[in-house]
Length: 421
View 1: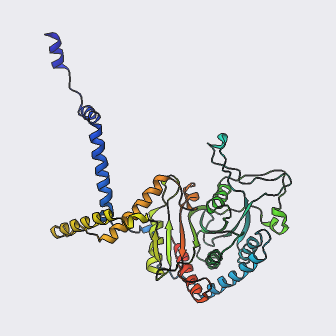
View 2 (view 1 turned 90 degrees about the vertical axis):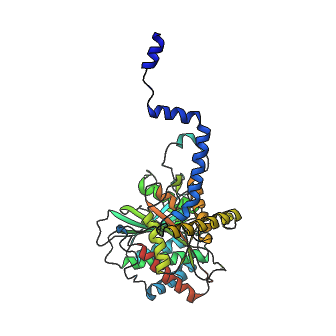
């Protein structure tokens, strides 16, 4: 009788313990229910998601006068002719960086070169846990072998204290420069020239013309590594590639803490579409994303101010998927019924919008889960700097001067308006 009495007086396990035992004993069923609920919620997300908004920190983007005029377009066209001449007479690809640096210097900016080497693709166990890489490998005679050259210009803000900076990045390949890359450099120079004359700047402006012959990410990553982790090479007097004119600009220059960065380039001409478009890339390493306000401002200015069509990377196979279109029709019908019951239940979304939204969502989830950056903006996120990459897709041919000038006006106004963020 005593053992049974002890069992009656023994306290029952706590509720959370009993719940844990129940879930552990039915873990397969519980996992299946959670996965099903997640998939259903994911399918409803494009219709349930509310429109994003701009916080008060964005200060009504696009409300200021863009100030980009025909004079800036004229300067950009002169820059194009000069850069094309430099590309034609380039010695090992060095004439273009020299020309860009001289143009920056004429604007009153502080300029410098940054020599770097491509990242080694060979695994080394002793370097696995270190973030600093030796991008400045030097030969015994003090020259670089197979190196790239970034050109950097810095405008000191008249109304700033030098503690913050905005970075503009324009990638190009000086070894095989294309017409669209020349237009990218001209667009960057015109914006840089306009900001150099602005008396209201409160943040320093850094324009990085990134040598992308080893890849766009490599050049930006090497510059950021030197910017945040300075490396000093003692006992070597360096004159890059034997060009003495560059020696005066080899001292690495820095601005303030990077507040944000914008990487932009002009892609190849599209033979379809009724207007120029901009494609945004935001996913960085390990699924990191920039501040949502940065994406919203970039999207708002492109669509509502300059008339660009904004494209976001999608999984193209989903756009023509029959089963996804069937789900879209079901959700659209369900949303229409719920809206009749209660007008506040805004679940109805058109089938094409649902399919496009799901394709965008799936692409973003895939890129974030993969953890690989979708552009050179990922190098900035490694240093906790918000950044986004933009690729302009024009619908005109590069030899059309009138269309090119119109694009420079809209593109320059667009990039300048982004600075107020």
